[in-house]
Length: 311
Image (cartoon, rainbow, N blue to C red):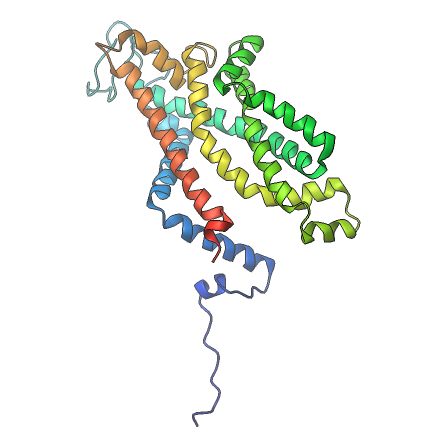
């Protein structure tokens, strides 16, 4: 009979992920992650940026296996300022006879160290200050935002130079200085996001249920700000790399013989006309990694922004 009911067709994995009626929180979260990945992967430049960053992570993790020479010890007598393509030295050597390729490989670890620590320190500070300021309002908002404005009034590199000058040169002090100067934009974004939701029905319902202001900020407002914050942090990675390289170039960041990319450019500027590769190779590394983070940030912005991804 044509009216006879048939067994329901089994649901595919894709249909399960894209279901508009998820049966559990796990299904809803996995479905949202799948939609976000589809939107992100449709942007080929963003995928290229992701590949660059993943390659950086692999190089940093396997530096001991990839590097062909010691990053700090060179053959000054026989290998000084060799050009790229020399047998055994694919990118040439510097004025101390050290292999530039090996120094770039190990320098990726310092670059990632700076990026991760600055993000871990500055992003939570900016998120906390911005959400508290936006939710509390009044004099609390005025005081916190005026402090933020003071930090924003100075160029990041100039302010970082001032803090490093007070703390002393070194990679640890450079990380602290960059983190201190990096949180104000995150606070601004978190405050703007908080201002848009603090009077919403969702927050009002939580408040009527007896939740304290601290719980509302930590459990309900901060998670709403994370997507915008992640995008901004990713886009700021290039600026963090350039600031760290600028401090290293001026001798205030990582100290010799550490293979920091900015310090490598500084040591090669004396030979820029004749032995151009000494400064050019770390400069190209900074360019490629900064470009990768910018492309990744653009892709995340398009994928995580509900105004762009809402269907």
